[in-house]
Image (spheres, rainbow, N blue to C red):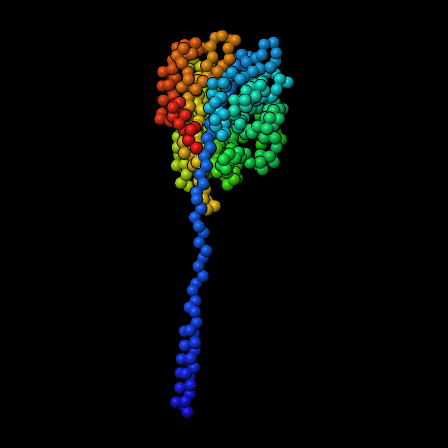
Length: 395
């Protein structure tokens, strides 16, 4: 009986094993493998200018005879092709364009004819910053009138705001060639003019807490983040410790490009490694695009620079990277002479001649002197005409 039970149990075990051995083996399901997409690469070019600081002598030379109208087309005609070639063209319009109802005026309390703004737009500029120490020169109403002017033209402006809600919720992003570029703009001061007590949000002021919040809020929505900074020490080519500290702070918050202005002279360009592995390109000061800033000890106020930035974006498999591929500068000269019937004209340095320099209001100007200033400040990042032409011919 015991043998029978043991034999039966063994038979059942063998039968079960054989039965299962005849089934198809179980193979773990493979995860679907997504085919690698071909990388798509796109490019944009950004050109940026420093301060457009319109003294009264500048707009009076642009005045249409006998009228309260002005023609600024000649002022930017020599750089127009460079501006219009760019996908995005930025300028810091340092003075307000409040309209003639506030009285046109120059230094020290500015209100520039709105025709100067038309001159910028006709030249090709499409991003206008107003965060500067002169933005409240004529008060709240003139600042709002300036916004009215740009809104009537559908032009993107930075650094001044209609409402707290707009400042918080409207991202300043321009999209070109599938590349989204975000902008923020700040100034160190308002020259003692107060903001309205009920509108402390009206102007972008340099404040780390506010900046960190706004940068971090905008960063996820753009491929490239550009911050305009009105900062630095007047008439000094050197960079202050405060500027360096703020640049490091912005690198920490993943800013890609800083466009600096205010000193009335040019300052160096730097590239700062970011903690996340990216890089921050800093144009500490592009000087004045146009001004009549008088400084006998610093003739360099007539020299400025157009930042030339080429941006590359590569996208594949729902992932993308965006980098600054080129960061150079085109030196410029603000030309004017003693003839009050002639306009102020901005030239790229590569087109400026000794004949023009000999007629400049500032004596003893030479092209070689101006080239030396550019080389001393910008070094190898000076962009010459032949190199520029090759770069713009590329995709």
